Length: 254
Image 1 (cartoon, rainbow, N blue to C red):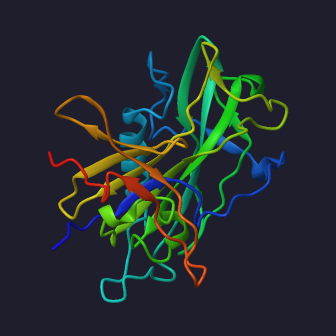
Image 2 (cartoon, helix red, strand yellow):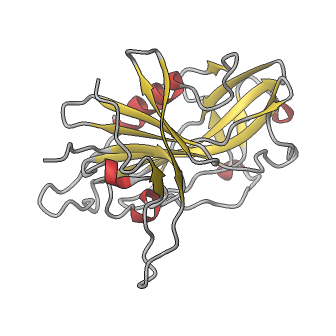
Image 3 (cartoon, rainbow, N blue to C red):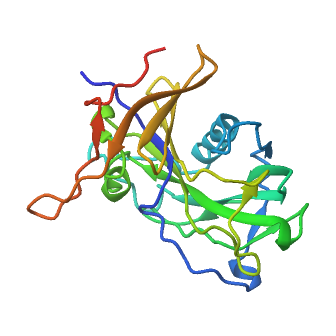
């Protein structure tokens, strides 16, 4: 039997991106007190492991965030709930911190992230939106579009999922320049947190250049598992998981 995972990611999918809005109702507030800010680590401008751990724990404990019908493996209308938080960095080029906003609540199959942020500690000129994070319910269905971006043959996801997607051309209204740390651009690596039935979690990063990395507690660092590339849809126009080298992609067992 393959191991079963609920998943937590930051990627596009059943989250419905919205255009930037400047009215108070459309601006996300940050930082979310449940997720401590993480200072940009030296030598790594990709989303850090500490932020992934904290945001996964905070999102998946929200009411309804992991509710799934065990028979149909589908979300339960009125009970299952998706949440979206904006992911951003704040500060200046010599001192940046990773942050997420208070989550917005959606319904059983979608939520809307906002791409304008009011931070309690920094003005808008020192805030760069870099992506969003949202939970998925029941793993793969109905999140097939999200999961098609990942080498899903490594997972048997069915409990819960949250995803972090970092987006190119980041910024926000009035501050369109991409975020940079010490003159190095932020790596747009999406992230996935997969939770086993016993509650343990697997943390992955997937870079635009194709590298898939898994966090290793034993090595206290990221380990590259494979390099993956998108594939064309099949004859029925269904999305196919990326092709990886080596294939199949195998997770670390720790």
